[in-house]
Image 1: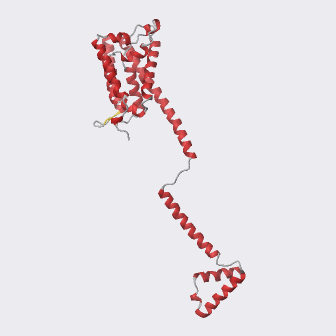
Image 2 (image 1 turned 45 degrees about the vertical axis):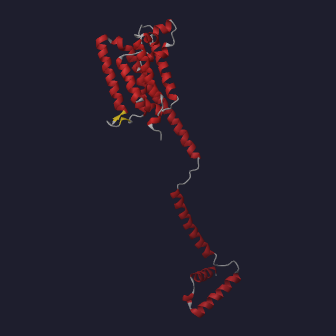
Image 3 (image 1 turned 120 degrees about the vertical axis):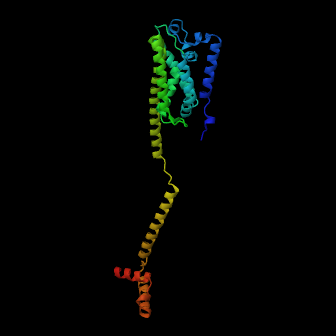
Length: 285
């Protein structure tokens, strides 16, 4: 059984990489954000396509940063363990790229800045919640995945509502769009994974039907006992059937011997086999 000490490293390394980028950006007074953040207008008009995949490493809002680190620390390792250590990083990269493309097309006429890991965080949280809703993230508190997801979504929503009240809805619109994309892509991926699992299970069942099932030891034991009992009964039947010989002279000779035994020692001296012979012989006559 795999232990958590051997769990896949991507979920452990990713937060440190993001944290390093954020600290460097802070040290350089936000210079990294200028080159990493997604500005749909610049992508379309100035062909700065790298922003489609670099924007998650730009510093987002405080709630975005908190959400990402919490999700990647508690949830992402479990999802990575459930999926595949090679598939998982590729999947997240494709989701981030798809998010960049979708948001670029959605806001290409608006001068907005999109940054942060909200989309990826909500994707991971949504997919893990749908795949393993009853997993216990915190055994000490018996907190299930679905409850943790609701808590994160509720806290994030409160932050957005307060941001809307202070700065207007337009200021939080890109962040909300990222969250909606993450939840939606998590739903779509869940349905794809479920569909693939159904196909694999059907093939597995079909293959099992063609494989000869090897009986268990206890089943073999019962079968051997039943076979022995049947063999014994069959042998007794054959023994009784074979008492009479195919040669009439032999049967007559044996009959004379039995009659002589009755004359000398009485009928009670006959064995079961001899009595059976007399019975079979009389029926034959």
